[in-house]
Length: 219
Ligand code: SF4
Image (cartoon, rainbow, N blue to C red; front, side, top):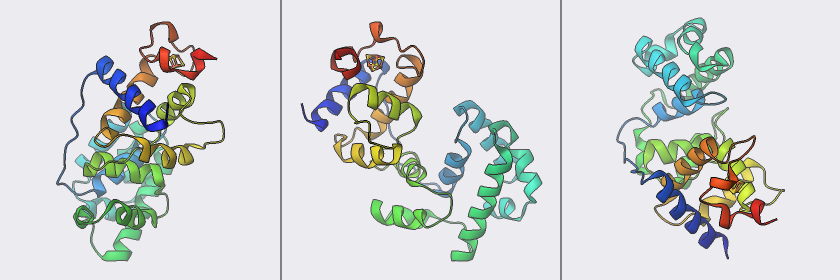
């Protein structure tokens, strides 16, 4: 079975297990999603969401955030973990964007192609291909496929990736093989599957809806 067919079948089984997902075409500033994604690293969704809410409550505009002292940013995002490191990255990013264009409105990205968005965001320090893919998928309603720790682990166990793929290479490999219109649902469902069933320790293969397609079970 080729990769696209296998991914299509896995996507269909996961949709049956976890239900449909509706991707929203957003109109707000994609910079919001850059910040959200930076905050989501190495923590739970609940903690990063809390950190983001507090950050926006204390600094409602990007100008406020840019002008805030570093310790103010650290204090606002403390609930998200790695607050010192993340605050330095947010501050540096806002400074770079300000220096590059003199404002924080990135809504013009909506008029660019995926490749142009990748090129624009990818030039800023600390914005890697996974962050850009998250902004494209969640912030702009595009067909990108971020590979986080759950997507990477489950995809490897299923046999979609070989042992040579790094997470970054996995993203570049998988993204074009995901059937059109399936990127959003497949990403969310693989994350949910990785949390609930194909867990890092002791995966629940006996009750897994993907077992008959899984290379780890067949070997
Ligand atoms: S069968 Fe096991 S290893 Fe394969 S996807 Fe399911 S839980 Fe993961």
